[in-house]
Image 1: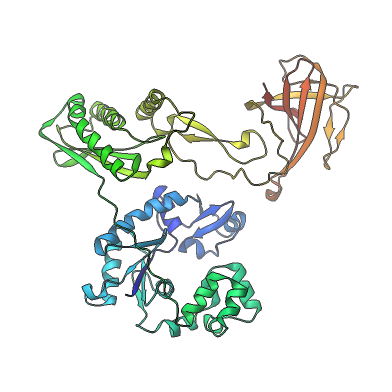
Image 2: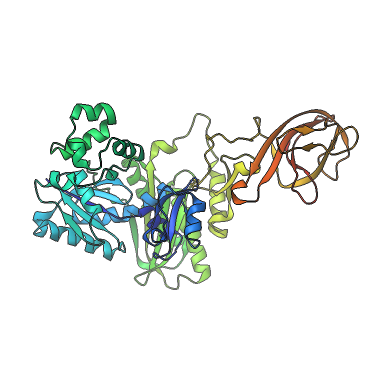
Amino acid sequence: MRALVVWCPDWPVVAALAEETLPPKQPAAVFSANVVQAVNGPARDFGVRRGMRRRDAQARCPEIAVLAANPDRDARAFEDVLAVLEQLRPGIAPLRPGLVALRSPGRFYGGEAEAAAVVAERLVQHGVWDCRVGIADELFTAEQAARRAQPQDSVVVPAGGSVPFLRDLPVEVLEDPETVGLLKRLGLRSLGQLGDLRAGDVLARFGRQVAWVHRVVSGQGERLLAERTPPPDLEVHVDFEPPLDSAETICFSARRTADAFVERLARQGLVCTELLVQAEADGVVASSRRWLHPRWFAAADVVDRLHWQLQGSLRAGEVRAPVERVRFVPETVVPDSVHADGLWGGTDERVQRGIARVQGMLGHEAVLVPVLQGGRAPADRQAMVPWGERPTGLRPTGLPWPGSIPPPAPARVLADPWPAALVEPGGRPVVVDERGAVRGEPARFRPSADEPWQPVAAWTGPWPVEELWWEGTPRRVARFQVVGVDGRAWLMTYDQAAAESVWWTEAGYD
């Protein structure tokens, strides 16, 4: 059984551009931690490459679209490609977003080149313009063949021809910078030179992955495809005869279908967290909307969303004829164990339904939830995410953040810092020099212009931070924890570059 690999280059960029509704020819790159993770062809023409820093990429291509990395988005967008391929040949093996393998259906289509042409044609019809196909005896060779094909074309490695095909390839195909650098330092430039080494030496020096490639180049490698079972059809619909024009009547008639929808998911051990609700009138989709749930949709939640959607559509005039069909499509499903209740319980269901209704009336961005992320200042550690949506693109909390204050975190973070003052016994402001040394002993302070002066009971710091030095306009700040004689504690910041006041109050320890 030969392997057929479909490769869609630069898939993270393709998925991100589609989500942002940007043109496909827009120079773009996906960044993670300000490093280029994926880049498309128009940006590569300007010299942008993977692993490049963001400022270097923007210097080479000022009009480049900066897109955030989101693996969930990439996988979700690639599901449509997988569905197209499953219609041609059940039992596909997704490798990662943008790369999928399946057993070559060459006999059914009259030849392997013909099968690759059918695959490319279906994907182009689906809107995937840059798709490349490789066919070979085993998976690694088929992937390398796909990477050497032209857009909408294929490279077919003859049966038994994997070894001569692979021997001329450079070691860069391993896509591991450390391993590639080590091989080059040892004078190994091609996979053929790697294949001439002894298997035991390769395993001991380079590890299992390179040893497996060595076996493939030696003509002994074979990897079975981990084929996935086609997912069950979880979509349900209900038809109305005669059609109905009342939202209450439609919801009452669809209640049993909502129960069947949730039960069908439960039999698969799944719950729905993102639901598409569609209402058809006169043979066309008159109302369509995606709904998110912070946990998962029960039957009552499905009926509620249908009712709110129909009310808004009828009021806006989107549905101008009686509804003849309602369809529930699970857009995102997860194992039910992910959303099992903890021992301490969860959010009250009435609160969740109320929040969902506010989102239905005012929009998805109307209800935001604070999420913790990495950062130095307390305000930098806050990120607002729409209710029910998984946070993406957050700064990692596990990384070291030099200059950040130690725990406990302040209870109240000010949206706009207050102008403050901190002086020494002689009345002169306490200052912090460029080396982070404190000049003057803090004696009195006031956290804002409305607060009276009071003596300092205790203080600690500073925690100096130098920011934005890479942009040529460095900002040097130093943070202090100050406790007054009234027992209240404040997080105060010294900013020498500030225009109005060098001292600010950022947060309070209430």
